[in-house]
Every structure is written in structure tokens, then in C-alpha cells.
Length: 326
Image 1 (cartoon, rainbow, N blue to C red):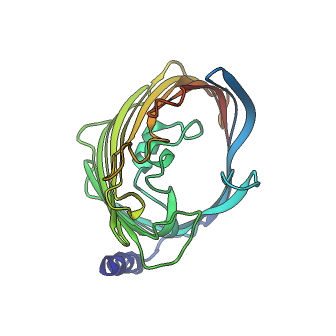
Image 2: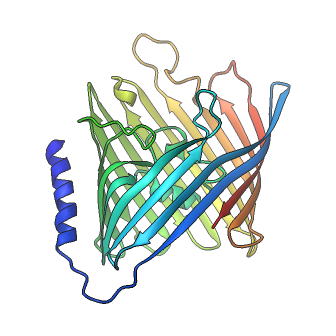
Image 3: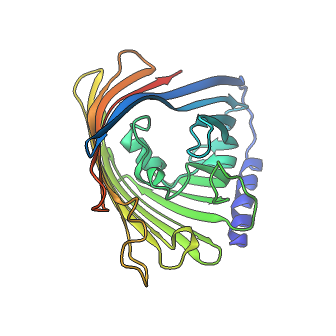
């Protein structure tokens, strides 16, 4: 593991030193902000609940030092989900990036690549996270280094080594998470990807992700399968699941979308129920997205959660989600 870490970091720095900027370049930078907000009403077992929410605010700055070198800092302001605080700011990204021809390298608090292709294909992050992000298979950002190389229009590969704790827990230890990805584009608009990572502590936790998607400007359909072994380094604990999602562009400003998830866990030795039964289940999403002007998206939609635990009732939620970006 440590040898792999050293190799990746060495490749990163050697690649940057191996290229020099010769032509004139005008440095530039820009701030950015993205806001996710919603109103929703939930119904379950004869009870209802309604609320306005600000789910998340991204606030940051991007700067280009040269044609090849850039940097990004990004704060993620969201509900921490614990305690009495309603919103907490986390530093999500703080990295330097090198990009030359078909080679890319990043170092610092970087975006992870385990589900980046899937999230882009899904396309509605402000409505719901993609499967692996939603069910905590991995964090969307972490301390580490990554490299990627595009061999041709058909094939690209990437590698990442990260702290493994995610950007909300920047713990420094000797337990790293190492991942390898391969992306294939055999024909126009069709993408296939397979990704594998592992991290060793008292046991070895590993994850496998497979994706196939067909995405055009007017239509998309994608599916993915995910599995994690020894979840949280617990021997024999497994999570798995599939996600299917599609989008149809009805007009210049209107899209129709739908999604189905199923999350499963196994029954470990000595137990009678699946170990994650309280969180396992099926997710249904369907709705419309309307973009009246550039930078604003409105999405009335339905979400249904069908718990695997038969003692729990089906949960129906009607949403009006909004994304504001500038």
C-alpha cells in the first residue's frame, strides 16, 4: 500500500516537472456558488410532515495559473445531520491540478472518482445523490492524489489514493484507500466503466462498481451495480445494490426523469436478519425539470421509499427542488 502511495505521488510530481509553459498565458480566476433548496411534504402510515429546506450551498473559487496548472477551493455548507447545528461549513476541495493533452493529475483535498461518471450521467444532484454517494459507499471528496490518462477516444484509465475518511473527517493515519478505474467508450454516446478500490485496517474493505450508460442531448438511460465487502472493516458485512435512471428532453427548457434504486445487505453469521435491514430498501423517483433561465432549475418530483423491513411503512414525499448556480 505504501509503495503504491509513493509511486502515485512520484508520478504526479515528475509529470508536472516534465512540462514547462512556453507560450504567453493570461492568468484568470472566478468565484462560483451553487445552492440546493426545496419544499417537500412527506406522507407515511397516516401521518404527514412538510418543510422548507436549504440542503446545501457550495461556495468557492477557481484559478488558472497557466495553461496546465489550476487550483480550486470549495466550501460545502450543509446540515451535518447530528447535534443541534442546522448548517455547518466543510472545506470540500482545496487542490492543485495539472492537465496536459491526455494526462491529468490532482493533489490535495480532491474530488474522488468512484462515482463521478455515474453522478454526471444521473444529472440531478440537487434532487438526489447518486447511488454510491447516497448509501455511503464512498465520499465525494478526500485528501489524496489522483492521475488519469486518456489512451484514445475509446479508452481511459484513472487511479486514486486517498485518506479514506472523506472530506468531513480529515484524519491523518496510515490507512489509505486505493482505487483503479477503467472507462470505455466503444461507440458515440455509450460509456462503460468498472472501478475497484480497497483499504486495509483490521480487515480489508473493498468496493466494486460497474456502470453502463447511453447519454445524448435528448435522451439518456444508465444502469449501475455496486458492491462493498467488509463494510467499515467488519468481516463478512456486505452491501450491494443497483440503480437505473433515464431522462427525456421534452423541450428546450423541460426534461422528464425517473430513477429506481435497490439497496441490499447480507445476513452475517449468528444473526437472523440482514445487518443493515433498518436502512435497506427500494427508492423510486420521477419528476420534471424546468429551466426558465440559465442558472436556475426547478423540479417538481415524487420520491417513494419502500423499506425492506416489513414493520416499516412506505414513505411518499412530494418535492419541489430548486438549483441556483452562478
